[in-house]
Amino acid sequence: MNKKAKLLIIGVAVMIAAVAGSIVVQLVQNQQSPIKVACVGDSITEGSDYPNELWMLLGSNYAVGNFGHGGATISLDAPTPYMQQTAFQDAKDFHPDVVIIMLGTNDALPAFQMYNSFFLEDYLRIIREFQALQSRPQIWIVLPPPIYHDGTGLSTEFFKQNIIPKIQEAANQTSLPTINVYKALSSCPDCFPDGVHPNAEGSKLIAQEVYKALT
Image 1 (cartoon, rainbow, N blue to C red):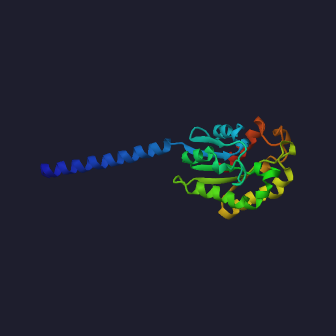
Image 2: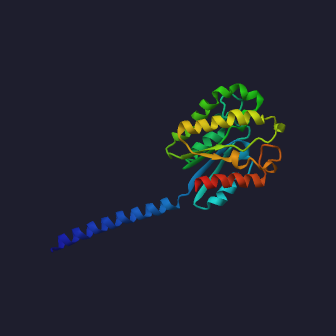
Image 3: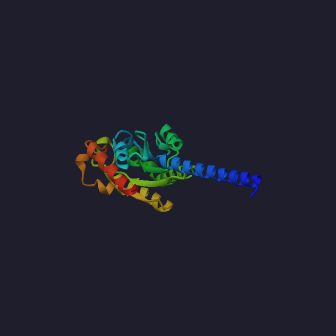
């Protein structure tokens, strides 16, 4: 083998080693990138410790973002639609790998019940917005915890008879998986001191249900 051929072979070997090295580096980088989980919701998300409890369960390979907004509704006709809040854009800018949507509780306010005929359509719009993200996130639809009494002005029966079934219908129409927090916490009134918002124990139970679904 002449000197020129040897140099050519060495050069090719170096190129192969460099490419292989860059692939290994890229794989390592991908492994180090945390899986981003966006917790989308209202005050049950924003004001509770459930997103933090979820992160503690999932571990350091995950990054969990709290994108709740107090008072947010599914309905676009109500005063505080989630889609018109900064939290919604922040959730999309997070480029999540997983989206947990837990909304609908505030739509049970008597003043908003007139918009219920558009609830399903508006819920589907939120879902499509997240489905259109470049990160192509896995989306989970949460049936929110029960409303234990009407002390906050929210209707227990309207929520049970109208909101919960339509959330399930949104999941059915989009073939998305659900997390039935409503059922899981249906026998824990002490977890919701005001009838709606979870205390520390309620937050842990919500996080556990979401964690079981994700893992």
